[in-house]
Length: 74
Image: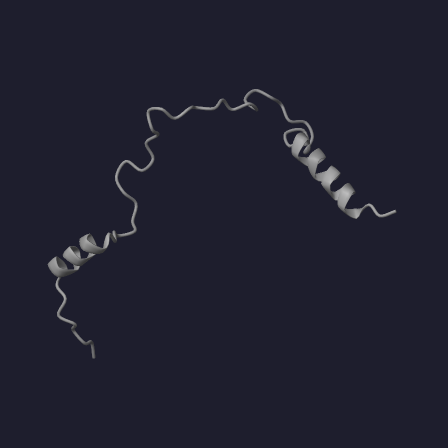
């Protein structure tokens, strides 16, 4: 059995406006970029990746250095 609290949508809307609460749902025009947003180029376009580490080589080499420093003990 449901208990009705007596709060209508107009009262709920007014209270939400007073408290500064808004509904959480996708707003219109959510995927439109801002006019001042810089568009970065895709750097791997047209590059043939022949081996698995070719595209992420700088990341993997930095990771190897961190692992080497962390595991090294005199």
